[in-house]
Image (tube, rainbow, N blue to C red; front, side, top):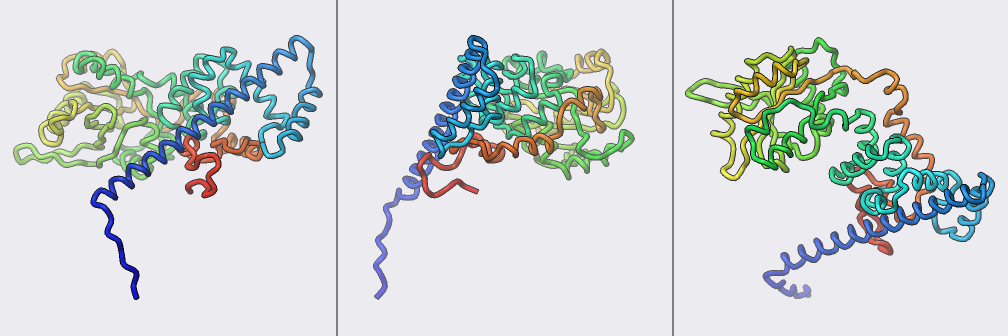
Length: 373
């Protein structure tokens, strides 16, 4: 005899979805709270070591003994190796104000903080990258890559007419979204590559391309067809920016910037606004990527353009100073270095998870179901 199936209430599915959402939120909050407590603890231990070294002349032997005693006292915890205690000391020295730890560093996993303090000696730069790592949800590898690519020197550097064509604060956010130059060295192309070669390669490496563009860009298509009175026109690359709430037209030019390029892009922006833009979208913006540019020429050209657009250079071959390139490790080298300390990571520390998950473990402390794959 088959078991009688009891019909579910009509609103059961919505109720279940709501409970799932609350559980996920609770897990995330618990993980973030646990991480904040851990980072605060590490900072306090590091501060104590600094103070005692200064006041009492502690040497490495004392810290080595401290590491052994802590491991014996808390055998279930990891993270009390000599090297990690030295990182804690360096951490407290890098962030001498405890309030900074609460504001930024405590929101990042431990080894994100290790990257910040070992790769950046300037406190203001550490804070700049820490805030963006939190906002953008960067993985540790992405954080290291952005430091190596000197994002702080490129962000908001494109020449734009946003100040005259977009309202505040939308214009400021849009300007900060663009950078100059864009680094496309991951394409493996030489400087003589043609526009279509670059476009094809960018689409093949769309994940890395989106990472270089920055957070918020959603790829909609390439060679997007527009028809105006029977004539066909094709946009190189079309995106939608989820934060700016607008379409973004990207045009590639394998030459130096010419004023007529701005006129062509202006036409495309008008067509997208009239044919694709939704009524509640903000005006479409354009990004013209060229091989080289003269900033004054670009400023003159954009001053007479009706639509909001920016112009930036792209580099197919890395153009950073050799001394800087040699002093910064590759992602692989850093991952190899940090992997050596993975077994020293305290239980519950989310640093071993990838991308956004390394900041948001999937299980609450005490869950016996493990973490999501």
